[in-house]
Image 1 (cartoon, rainbow, N blue to C red):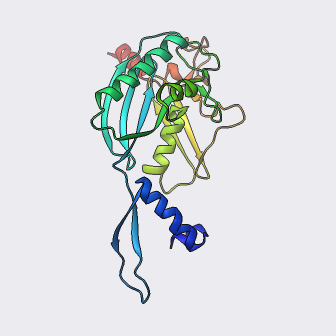
Image 2: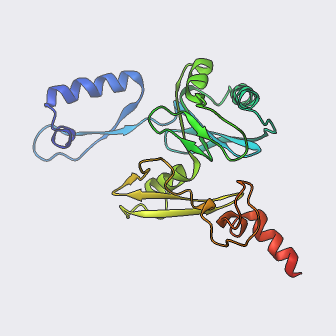
Image 3: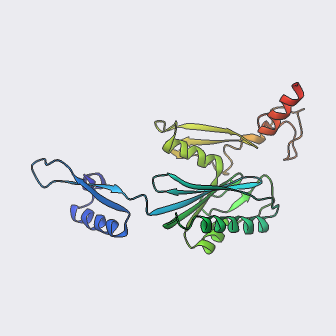
Length: 246
């Protein structure tokens, strides 16, 4: 079956399978019922021995989570990060990840990747961060800093696009090739999935709907403009409107 799906020669499949078993990435389970020839052996992914760390970097904090390859959450911690410069934030973030790893060393078997998602403009190819809403950044090479510190493959991505992709793989939009996820939190943004892939656009800012002007005479936004969507549809704006009505 694997040979048919992959269009590889059976001998190549056998060799690759043996290598993956030796590496501990897959394992053989029960034999399937005989169909007249040699009984096929079922193969499943070995999820327990390999772990990944996911980091949600917010405007003032970070949530760090340990997963196995089945996406099971093994541990999670929250770290305040009040730093307001690129250099101090990078230092604090890397130290928080190191502290998290030390705290859960007994649960951690083999760390294979670290992923950081954050609000702002991120180059999907280089992983460089060109803009964040709360601090001044300039071509922030966070991927390089992470890989140098932790010696594993690292990824950096846009937070809402990453959530849209997760929803596409594991959530409510699994059966949809095209979908839009809109998130209202401290800010407002959207992630677009087109033909099963993240839609980024030429400038990489597709989905940054929070700073579309919807009320020209509205409240001043932290970006400097007036009447942005975030001044109406974001946590702080909603809370303030409710308080004004009480």
